[in-house]
Length: 349
Image 1 (cartoon, rainbow, N blue to C red):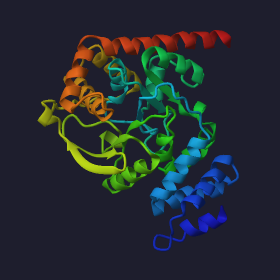
Image 2: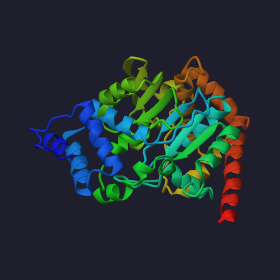
Image 3: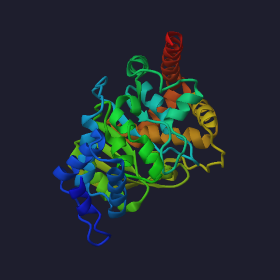
Image 4: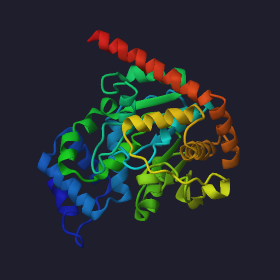
């Protein structure tokens, strides 16, 4: 590990990228506990300053995948790679969009954990808590059972990837973004051929698209979305990178051109408010900004996964499913299955 640190921690001008093999060795040392906490902290800080190369990111993703559980419940499913540090000032439309897509016949894999740095925002894990679903106490089998009845698999990452979970306290102490903030979103728990992932800075657009090509996704969408998430804006255009096999191309998705442009109200978001808003949307109700945002994100992802011939066709499909209650039904099937398992788990204790 010391030899790796000597390469990446030479300072801004002298630092060198590691080869894939050396980066994979460093990742294994960190995940296996062979690196000391001081070495791990120094490595993560040095990588943050240097900026991770595509080869280094690929190596860390492969190492994380090797130490995680994977379930191929649905051969044709899409992975929503939400940020594990959560959201503070925007609606998590990816949550209701998951049940919308499931009701359209496209299964979804969601994953996350309790909030992490640097944002310490509201995560999908918090939304489950607001619904009285204790994700930390339920087993992977409980979530698999709920997925079979609803088409939505939620993965509590710390139960499916204990090696990553063991780094939580160190990451909390560092309090900054590290290479694991990217790698953990790409563990691919559901063996998904399609995925959406968010980025914040323009500088990582090309790098992320090249990483996704190397990881072999059939199609993927890199979104410069709300708070660096995979959610498209509804009140302005969103820059995206479409990865299609070995090719990647930049595009812009403008809700105004689709007749969906809607001003977004200021909201003091809490987990409970996020859940309540999501449930309103799933019932075909609520504020038009959040309804339209869910429609847009659902339609774009439906088109990405080749379940709609165009975004416009995806909008037509999604609106019908929302208004007719199909998405609400999928959500209730999922929630009821997990609440029944929550009760069983409590009785067992």
